[in-house]
Image 1 (spheres, rainbow, N blue to C red):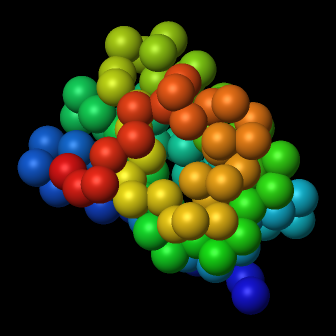
Image 2: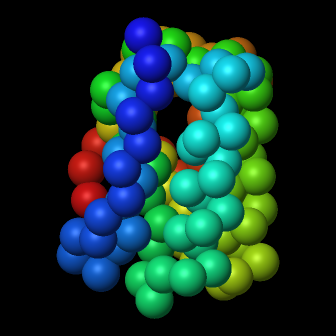
Length: 106
């Protein structure tokens, strides 16, 4: 399954909706969207909607960590929205489920 990344704004929040598989080959697409969105948005919060991600490997996790770090440098909040079970398992194994602000919805 390929990767689809869409960016929009809701409730004064920049939302990056991700669907498909986030792996070594597709994570650069997510990274590019994060790198572009974080410094340009006027929103205080950047949210990555992971509800439709079927698979994520360590490169996807590294991309999310980079997004968190970039957001912190820009003094913006960074959260993950409704991560699918497969994503939560990876975040838990990496012990990042307590590092990220994980929300069920905005």
